[in-house]
Length: 250
Image (cartoon, rainbow, N blue to C red):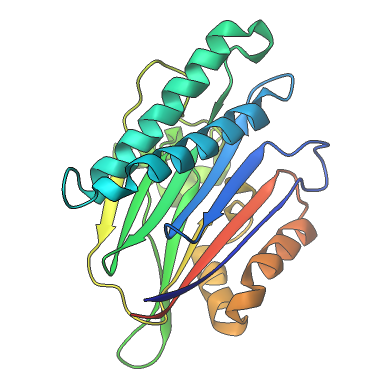
């Protein structure tokens, strides 16, 4: 299996520091995006800790796949370890109290894609259909107040812009001693599939159709930079992080 990957981050036009973090670990086909939050620059500490914790867990336990645990367990345990490390650090350092981070993990293994996440950073897949046309699907579901209210029929997706709740997340890494991790598995990858993990600094500006069209008109190697540049043109009010992964061949 041949995979190409690109990861980029930008602080945006408003914030002086970048609390996002990402990891591109091609040796493990492991790709991570984290969007930190917290005062005194603690958000960037939280996002760095969780990315490093997940990478370290994979380095130590990758060899156990098939014999002792499956990929979903590996991802879940890695994220839970990151949560523990962020929470423990915050308890010991008053300036970092209350820090946390979102997390999205993409792990390509045995011709399948395993996705784990906490928070509202997202993973999308762009795939070519039988007619040769690209279409976009969102793999993750935001852990946010917006998604909860839509699921409970309190508001519709079209009404979201009327309410000042778009940035309220309901689950994050590091806020509590334990965290629930959601996972999804794509069991049949196709050559040409493109995955994108991103922080909300990107997707907040664009409708799904606009994101989908980007995959059609921009070459893979330029996607991440193009997406960040477009976010900056739209205002760049937040940190922006993009990781793109293409299945070149199986």
